Image (cartoon, rainbow, N blue to C red):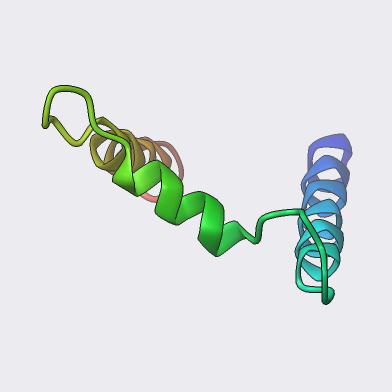
Length: 67
């Protein structure tokens, strides 16, 4: 029950930050802006950000959906 509650709190916090980011004149980046910045990150023309995002989704799929 504690873990489910923590996931619910994290989801609500995510929604609150996204709503605050979409207000006119807000300096908080939206989730889409953060994702775009991470995906553009490169080191010596190697797309490190893109590899990291794909690796994260692979990890999520492996741990939660591969059973």
